[in-house]
Image 1 (tube, chains in turn cyan, orange):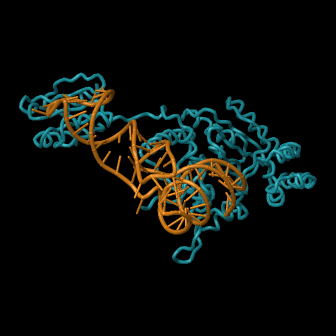
Image 2 (tube, rainbow, N blue to C red; image 1 turned 45 degrees about the vertical axis):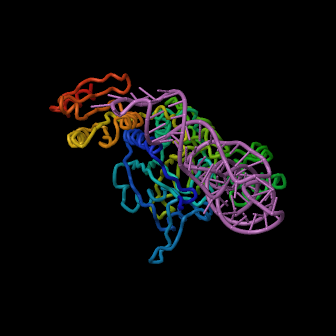
Image 3 (cartoon, rainbow, N blue to C red; image 1 turned 90 degrees about the vertical axis):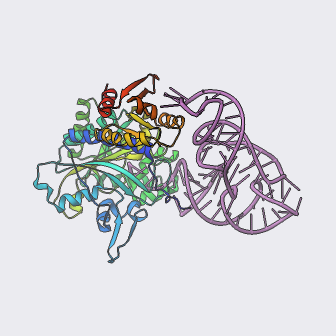
Length: 417
RNA sequence: GUGGGUGUAGCUCAAUGGUAGAGCCCCGGACUGUGGCUCCGGUUGUUGAGGGUUCGAUCCCCUUCACUCACCCCA
């Protein structure tokens, strides 16, 4: 028997209903914050991801689903969507529209990793991008959107961590200083961090090894080495968040994985997620547009991991949609009478279902119960002769007559009462 | 890619070196046209797969696959 691929999951109805609710709420919130939807392809020229995510990143190096198209072109399933959105922004000259361009998207991403708690090979992200603006109040706006989203979804226990990793002016200087510092401790670092100090020294800062953490805490902080502009920017972001009463934590060791980040970076984390504790992450990427061959364009954004978000949802907050009416025909005459009624009710937006005319009343009652029907309607030969059906409230077991003439409207009156 | 844990009925799990059981679920009945509760009855298995040791393996050993958690990396 075949089953789904490793790291690829079926989202069954109970779970899918939660997704739908989350999407309804998020569309509403994005809209209130002035964002417009965009849909970009799942497949792109792999060079897009090399230029954006970074050729050195594991995401592109080892984890991308990349293959040759039938015409020989090298293509890849997107590991994230920011690069595609920025490509679309450049390709379609969206800078000619009102500034900033505020876009959001939702959809599947693909990375060939070993699955674990909160990590899949096909996973889903909902993300927002604000393109074309440099000022810190846009960072604040984006973070406030994220904070409000969690509020609307009644997800508690989220910690918003922020940091600034500088810009092309100050980051290289800091990087050199950090490198010089780490040189003195090479023998005391873990094996991973010795490699990291060569490839991506900032990563040493968030190593989980106790010994490395000690060294990291003694190391120079990126925040002490920001240039005047970056320092001012970061301060303004903090002030803006405080003005909105949005709690945050400055986390000087917070580093981002993707090459394109600059200045503000942030993560929303929860301790209920296992090792993969970030439910959303993002930051500013002022250099990305240029790296993709567009005009220099500052921008920022975030992505929410939908599966991780789902794991944090309080199921009791998701509104239920119970079956309003279960129609029980006893025999074919009743069934012939009820089928147009069923159709008419459904066209009026009522959620209803009909039983099998050949099944016993008992078994149809049971099915109505399993479907959590609010009401059942019983029509057998006795009801047809009398011209009155029986409608039963399944909660309080009160059963009453319901005239068969103009039955649809009689039922609507009961259901809408 | 590396390491740990786990694979037994649809689900959650027992069991013993002598070829498997419970609860839940499902179906039927008690109650021939009235659900949930109760009681009674019933269905379901290549014990993940392959090989080895053994008179005999679900159990021990090896291999493999899957799931899972962690590392790496990241949403």
